[in-house]
Length: 351
Length: 268
Image 1: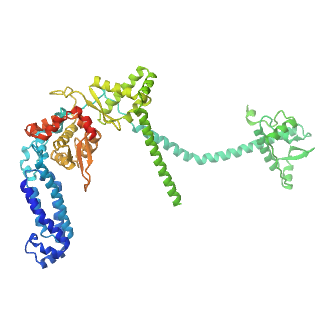
Image 2: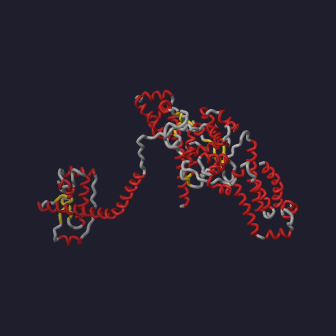
């Protein structure tokens, strides 16, 4: 322990000078030649500088040394060995060939690590009473856990670490012993066991539900749209034909009396149905299936006879716009005294 | 285009920030509504409830604590209110008073608020461990053995230990933090995550270290649950040494009886 400390201190100072000297340049460096070792001439020095493989080797050795110190730190801290001294002596040998700043930096890094170790070793000295050594603690614990050491006596010497066979219940033994040191609340368990919540299934279900309609909706979309268009057209056509049927029926009932347009179209119970009727009737006029004329300044409507259709169709096209508002609708109902609709609504007809 | 994108981004970020602020505010608000119901508020709240309702809620909270304690993860009051108390938050102090009493007198457990700021609770066994064989034959949890070793090293090293010391010691015990252990699984996760969440350990970064180094300390639960004197006793047995020979540790173990450590630990 003390040897480690003192040798470390001895070596630190000159080595520090050496590395700082390197930074100042080669000229300065020659002045410090005593700690670089004898036999290093200027020529020699230049040769070394050019040889990159040697430089690499030195750096790699330094790194190995730093790594081994970091990894075996706890072993090195143990008061029972002189590993720190050994590392420092090794580093001192390496330093004889140090020429470049990079190597010197590595040397300084090793020094930092070594100093840290030294500090920790020193702190062990200060502690009052018996020191605690985790390594020794681990050894004792292994015995307590029932380590079978007899088998690997040789390996133990080789590796520096104890090898051996730990029984299956090694940690249970420790836990058992530890129980008395804990005031842990005993874990609460159901006598019949508890059921396990199963979160995954509901999640899957949600995913399925989402996916399936998505696909179907995609497949359904185009056909649905077509159907809607068709049905809409069909409905209009059907309705137009139906109204034509009414018109022809009334005309046949009494061909001499003109059918008043407003009386024909207006549904006194529904303004919106009146609009629909006017809309559909306009198709009859457009297609030349019905014609409108003024009788005593009042618009009248009459079906076009089968033979006349062709002739009238291309002859003279006239356009007019019929409009109706809620107000005029009411006025017309009063004026014509309309009490019933001539065009039966579709749904009531069905009934 | 890019400008618009940027604009919308900032909008989003500011929105989300606002939202999080709101969330925080709500949490605080929520906290306030059940932290400080005044005595008269509690009184009024109780008047609206039958005693059977209060008893029922108390029982639910007791059960929540017991079940939560299976994993030794501390109970946050916010969770307790959210999952169990719900509409009873206005009578929170009264319920907790009854819960503490029930845990104490029926179960022999002590409910400890280890964090008075965030209101975090753990359960401690009030009863001393039985001498000799334990009464229940429940199988021992090997993790407790591992935890015990770590706590012992920390204690013997006077309260704080660099993680390397722990890893090194465990390696000697055939537990390598880098490898999957057949009993502990991911050892590093168990130690730095599970034990830490259970508040047995603290795993803190040592400032100004490059590369980053951490050290272990005792967690609040360990301070409350674990007897330093008994650890020292075990150390003596192992090393075949008198516990008194570790002068400082012996002083530590016997100067602060466990019952009063709650306050010191929370101050640390």
